[in-house]
Image 1 (cartoon, rainbow, N blue to C red):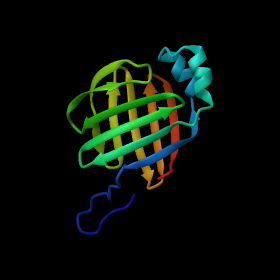
Image 2 (cartoon, one colour):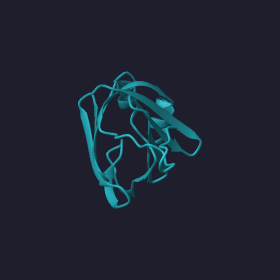
Image 3 (cartoon, rainbow, N blue to C red):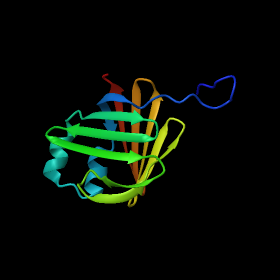
Image 4 (cartoon, one colour):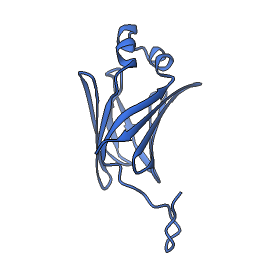
Length: 140
């Protein structure tokens, strides 16, 4: 982790940018557990989704394009908002930021999105003992 000399706090990077899915682990098991139909799981396995994040201070707009499906969520850190999930369900939730991590709990799913370096975005979704991990690389 990078540290600044004056304040001894982590240097935070902007999440803004476009990221393409490079690899994923646990997709099929996780999607079955959240109730996605088998045909959608089969189609989704090979699609390299693109996530576009626009960050303006504490305000975020996240657009995820997976083939023909486009999912857009806008939120302000620390404020309750309605977020659409992978299954199309709308859930009220609060997104919090901790350093280079965004964390939100949607029903029983915990989502942590971490900017591990300026070009790599790692999204980890946890449901009980199931973990679905997505690693995306910056396009722009």
